[in-house]
Length: 107
Ligand SMILES: CCOC(=O)c1ccc2c(c1)NC(=O)[C@@H](C)N2
Image 1 (spheres, rainbow, N blue to C red):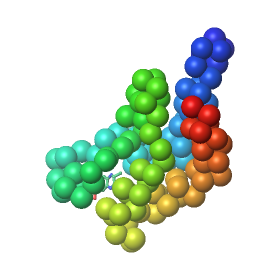
Image 2: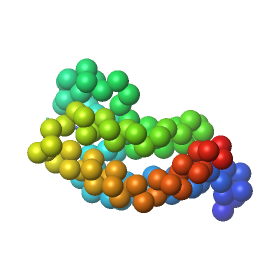
Image 3: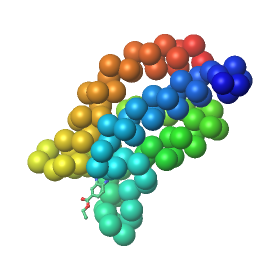
Image 4: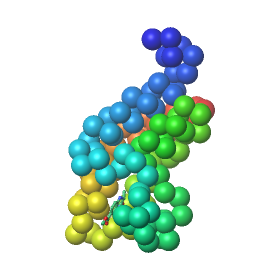
């Protein structure tokens, strides 16, 4: 693919993001948290993140780290589907993370 030659890292990051989107079967992390649905979310979370925003940031070469799962684990109580989904994503992503660390060092 030509994009592999032009932006190899964006290509790699986008593929990794696609894997996360696939794991997020309940689509909890795909869009920014809805202020009407969760009014106090933005009170607790300074740096909200979601997969749609990450895709835009990859395209703009402004890649974010995956610390953003901490948002989910700090906002939601342990007994929620949201908290468990955040754990699942973080744990499954941690197998890919070392790759990202070397990518980000390289960049
Ligand atoms: C109407 C109740 O909705 C929620 O409690 C809720 C709704 C959406 C959420 C969320 C919680 N927690 C999160 O971490 C982000 C990713 N999304």
